Image 1: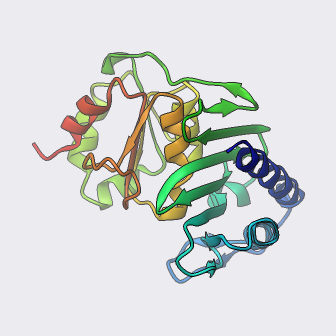
Image 2 (image 1 turned 45 degrees about the vertical axis):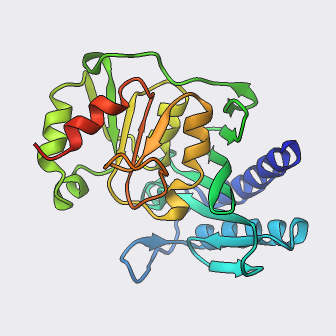
Length: 254
């Protein structure tokens, strides 16, 4: 595992250097079929990550947001990549974007990294190890009351559009603070003990696979919004663990 952790850190550092060369510069923004933005930085970073992985582990498969699936069919190990999570923030010069790198073994995440290159922050979670931030162990917060909790979400509009508006209102009335520090940055804040709850109603595998080892290795919990434990569904709820069941009860239909 240490070899894989070291290699993941190497991937994060290399891709981060490339991404930062484009950060703050005027960039052409294209729209993908699903309407989401993509830039040359997204594509170049994923190509770099793929090339490094294929050279080091040719028997592993790779799934990336921009390039899809490649590598050995039926491989036991699969890398899952989101070169820039938060592209909308990135193209506007907002530093709260990140690179997500995950390794799955037989479909289950065993290693994940959230790299925030513009902030110089690298969070790594690995099976049977504590999550680290820039090499130092971190833990979720010990807040055990909703009235003292910070709730994060990426987009209030998507919460309502997907039918979670009433549940969101129930939850936001109970917490101390609500902020829109979203995308992977929100989950990063939960894992590092700076927030207690992060809601994400829309997720793909490349959005969530890296988050689970980071959250759980820091003592927290990650499920979907219905409470499914795999945490690899089409939504995500990250908490410090102490509040998870109470949050789920508020998210369920009254």
